Image 1 (cartoon, rainbow, N blue to C red):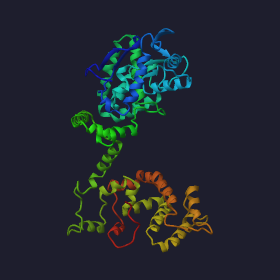
Image 2: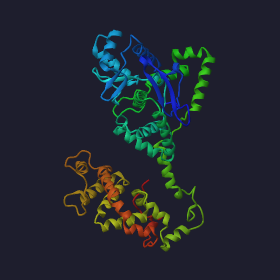
Image 3: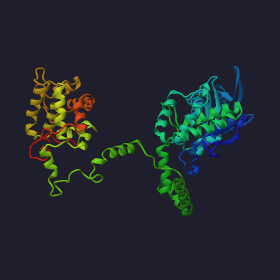
Length: 483
């Protein structure tokens, strides 16, 4: 997909064996590598030698134009013809072996079915077509997502049944449109320009070009479940790296000519300058979103409302807490980030407890807090604490029963069976605690954020009525803060 013009996007046009027209219109930059250093170059050369024999006039595979109902299918051959040619000209006696070789050639994109995205070969009358040498794997194409987006967008502009997007292609188009939302107008313009150029071509030629373009992307963006042959074999890549690093027999030969080694290094560095090697991943985007969300709470970036009493002589922060003034808006806003943020704040936890009590589900938070407290106890008190939790929340006649799933209950019950050798541990209720926390997070917490109780605090219409928030600064024991 090499663009020779920034406006038209028309690619080169050439002729292949058996009179097959080959061309391509796209917007990709062709990244060529040093063929001698490529790990798969030997395999590609062997395959291409076979393909060249197949395309030889007179002795190659019979490529013809087939007349169909009200249309013509140009430059095609059948799978049976291909398998028969391999058996006759490559000394392959077993039909299965001949079919396997045909599969390998198709999986690397040297030939392809004209009506299917799966690059396989059938020994029947299915029609296939040769790929243009311009897009052979030995040219080391490295297409980017923007090129794929242009191709899919162009397909949507053409009202032809054979060019309709498959389900996985439609999903990929939606993902790419979301990914490149800011530059989608530019992508659409590129696709529109290429579509106009394609319409000026001959009808039969356009059919061939469309199928070759589709086959190219079937190799580099394969259908889900198919093998991606563009991935480099790690063993071959290591051997390639060993050559340049000077290890092994290949390295000894390379280092015998320092000038040649230096020239290869310079060419490699030039290629890296021309290529974009840094890609912003989803992980980086999530980190950016996280730090943007918490930037106003980072005191390196945002000046705090009150000075830190541990770093200055001012006790304004503690005085504000004691006087029971309004809860800072910034503090209440942070409760809406996640359930853990809400529970980390003593005042937030107090308000969430009141909300749960109103909904008659306060036992969930009590059960979860009891398990967190048990983890901080010395080993000598674990058995007693675990027994108290079991009797309080999990037994059939528990005074404060908690609704957990059967799996969590069975795991907890194993520790309290008579004759149990292990006995309860500080982690015996972890599965049950995770289940209860998930229930609070997905159900109670979301309802709390929509409740009038939270909205009143968020709007600043409620004042603090308790000084329990000072526990974090006092010597009183409290549930550990979650990091």
